[in-house]
Length: 141
Image (cartoon, rainbow, N blue to C red; front, top):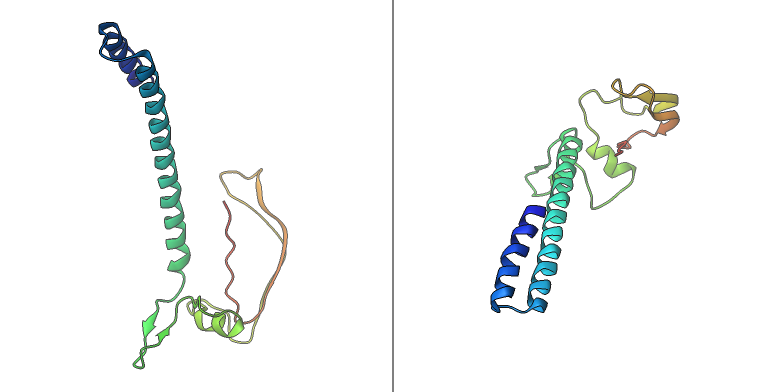
């Protein structure tokens, strides 16, 4: 962007010297160009964040069973966003590797850090009780 600004200023100063544009027009053009450039860079950065979020959502949704239509046209399986509570969570709980019906999952005093950063704990003394039929995801950034 610095090179582009320099080129605009050089060409603009030549146009100003020849009287083709006024100093005010040159200044307005340069400042407007900077604003447009900054906004374009910002859009690109936000697009990267959207792509990262889509990738994370794909991983989370990958653990849920696919939603299928029953013969009466109702959707079954997957994540039921229309209602909440134990009944809807139980319908959407993954079946592969899931705990037996009627059991709960309990974590007590769990510490966790990634192998690449063993000195940076991610979880510290986590206590978590997940009742039967609840679907829970730990999500961080």
